[in-house]
Image 1 (cartoon, rainbow, N blue to C red):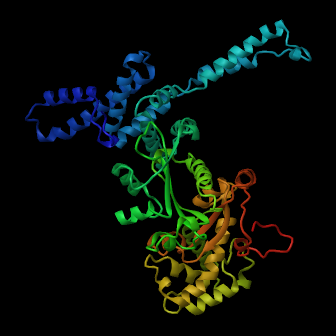
Image 2: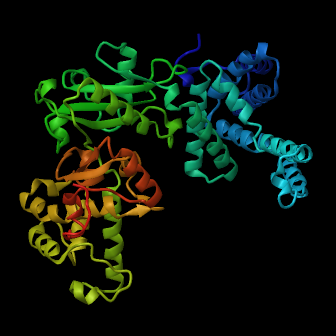
Image 3: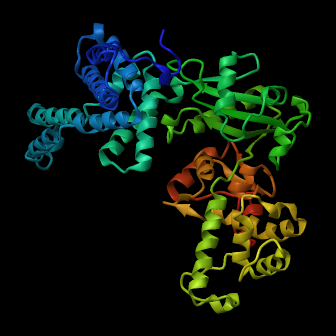
Amino acid sequence: MRPNDPSKLALSPLSNEVNQMLSNSQGNQAPRNTEDGNEKLNKQRSFEVVRESMHSAISMNKTEVLDAVLNDFSEGYFSLSFENRRKLLLTLAKEYDLNRTQVRELIKQYLGLQLPGGNEAQSGGVEDEGFLSTFYRIERNLRHSLKPVYEVLFERLNTHPGGLKVLTILRADILSILAAENISSLRALDSYLKEKLSTWLSPAALELHQITWDDPASLLEKIVAYEAVHPISNLIDLKRRLGVGRRCFGYFHSAIPGEPLIFIEVALLKAVAQTIQEVLWDHPPILESEATCALFYSISSTQPGLAGINLGKFLIKRVITLVRRDMPHISVFATLSPIPGFMQWLLSKLASQSKLAEAEDISCSSADRSGLTFYENVLEPEEERRLIESSGDFAAGKNGMEIMLNLLTPTSHDWTNSSKLLSALKPALMRLCARYLLQEKKRGKALDSVANFHLQNGAMVQRINWMADRSEKGLRQSAGIMVNYVYRPETIEEYAHSYFSLGHIHSSSDVRRYVQPLTENESSTN
């Protein structure tokens, strides 16, 4: 049986044979100054062995030995250094791409055909069927030629035991490379593999499982290791999250047994929580029969290679359906979510505007700056006045934005220890956070990654919460602010469609008031 940890897989038998030959040829008393050269040669030969096994996995038609070849490729790939994995993936992307010469020739043939004119094209007679058969043949050949050769490797690995896990690791490596280098051939490879994985990991292929304290220790260890939002501190914390008043659900695939692809943690509450402390701390849980709200407070993906494949959308919908069936007294489905990009956006905004103000040598009133095309004072006059009056010895600056920048930049977060500063900062930060969530966009969608995730799944922005997460991570990411998204089963599809097609963000009147006054005739979701 193959080890569970791919990084600890042994070299393939063929690789071992090559290494043994190298060892014998070097002898026991190899000179010190030749060791580096021999190691380099060994790595190169190992790479060549894996590349050959990859070629065999793609080109071989003997099904009786294909499993052994795929095993050999998988184990050999895991034995490679990251540098050689990169080299192999580039080889796969470039040398096993589609045949563009063939594609061009087929397109040329297709464009050279003439359709029957007028009503003849619709007659459907025997002669027309014969004439159109040429179209059908070229179209079939064109579809086939537009499939890259590396599709064979993906298809074969998908049906091979353990192969789906290999594919997720391959894609994780591809994404790591693309994060540092924009290589068009590798990006095309990633796009194709992502499309395949999205198909193979459809909801019909996934199993929803409620994770409990009675599950195997190996599974519980993975929950602790993969929890990405609110780290699990110890076994008591884990037991609490799986105990009374709490639920944990995961999506599993039969090809990756004992390991969830994604899991979600749920708290059963009387009302929508405003702080993460209410959920994670030692408050005794309420009776489940008294709960009216299912709060999703953490959702974690376990496979980096599945990034961009929205399994969370299906998981949330399945969990809502399950909870409504088993606990009909629960009518509210909400989240308590982080806002991971808020402080990065705000500090960048403050820094750029402060530099612009300095370049223009303006430390005068907001009214005097209004003529500058690119200058924007993100603070309202009253917010700026209160901040200047309250900053005292905590931070200095020529204007309110510079003071805010100097207050929020230090990682010590000293501003949280002053009730006067907290009171002065709250109106500005809450308003700017609402602006960030509702108005700051990229390609027509919410700039914040978590907001985009929930909005594309059909949620609405219900409430933003002051000092909801006082952890170092919470203060660093969003000045401690968290947001409640609400999923209304009857509007999920409508909201998801309007967000996808128009970029429209549904929100409550309380949230929208931060960024614009509501008129009597203005529509806003309550």
